[in-house]
Amino acid sequence: MKKLYLNKNLGKKIQPYFYILPAISVVCFIYLYSLIKLFQNSFLNLAVPQRNFIGFRNYISVLKDTVFWEAFSHNLIIIAVAVPVLIFLSILFSVFLYEKIRGWKTYRFVIFLPYILSITVTGIAFGYIFTYNGILNSILRLLKIDFFALDWLGSPKIAIFTVIFVIIWKELGFGVILFYSRLMSVPVEIYDAAKVDGVTWWKNLVYITIPQLKTVIQFYLILLIITMFSWIFNYIYVMTNGGPGTSTNVVEFYIYKRAFFYNVMNSANAASVILFIIVIIFIFVQFKIRIRIGGGSE
Image (cartoon, one colour):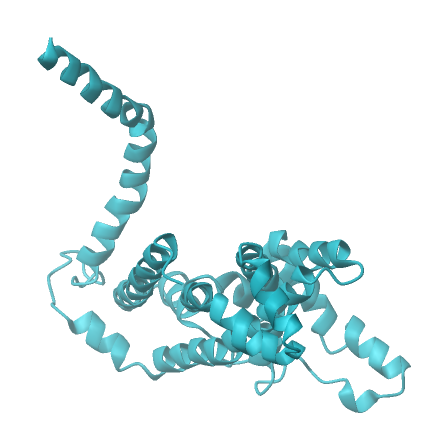
């Protein structure tokens, strides 16, 4: 009887996995098989019919390519500018929402709305806004401040920062909601005690709010870095196509151009693996931080 009872319990535990087995099989075939082939092809010479093994030559070719390092540097510029700004604005706006300033529900909707929009739609819309004869420059000329009417997407010096602005506008909503959700779980007594002691708003922010958000900030930081490395292709493709020249080229777009524009699959595969390894490292760090959040190690 005991053995039968244990078998029934085991069957109940395993049963749910049978229901999701078809979906898991499809995911494994599409992603896992593709990943294995990617690693395999990165060590082969795909330019010849024999596809012979050439070791790390593809990787060496990519690492010697100045265009790859330029693209990588653009990812770093985006991270260096967008990440601190997103974290700062997310904390600031989440505090405003937490304090329920007048019209806070409307502000919450307005801030989060861009995040649910399609990147393609966002990129096309801002592409029209930021062209030299677009909406923004037309308004600036109408206001007689023509010196601000710049070639936002056509200038190699400022195109990357225009893209960064759009990324910040689009991604801000998630950070605000993330921090706002964390603030909702902070004991109100902490702020009440600080109010009694006459603590100023800025000291409240620096010495109470930010320490309470410490682990979530770490989590969001890693999430943003992963995003800036592997989820900005659409912005670049729709808004600038990597230009002018290569001034907005990023690693994702570099891989795309090598694979589908120049048909150089050797370096495209190697660059994909390099990007995959970079992202996996940050995903591992993110996973460790999520464990800390789940463990309540605030």
